[in-house]
Amino acid sequence: MSIVMGNAPSHPGLWQETVYQTDTPWQHTGISSLPTRTHGRQELQQLSAQLAQLSQQGRWIVLINPENHIGYKELLARAGVRMDRVLQVRARDEVEALWAMEKALISGTSSAVISWVEQLDHKDKRRLQLVAKSARAMGFVLETNTVAENADQLPRLQAIH
Image 1 (tube, rainbow, N blue to C red):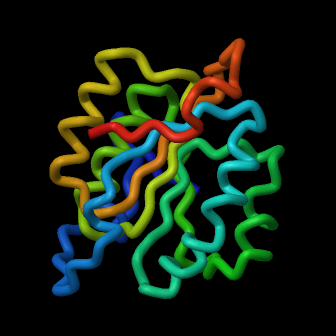
Image 2: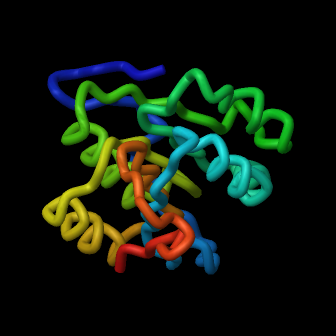
């Protein structure tokens, strides 16, 4: 669900500058890039327990361009995620998706932001490094077009600092 104004997705709960008094450890975890062969299904399953806990805090769990065919709604609901705290954003392209991710991470209204993209290039990774310094939520980028020939030899989770 997204409302598009101009070139940017808009949702009042996502973009408001609400400052929360609590300073919890997950706010300083940075942004992680996860290459995926399952369009994010396996990675979402791994994160689902943590997302369920975060959804109880009243902030948004933001999903940017999620793959519908993986059944993410059912997966999250089964894990106990409050679905009234899940916000789905549909961006037109990866530039807009990364912009939406950046805004959601620094707004203070989200506890976790997960974005599905084809693949991050060097410029995008650098941009996320800069965003990670002021992020107030956990961030995950699921790279759906990153296929490693020797997947066993590569790290499963790559932090972007």
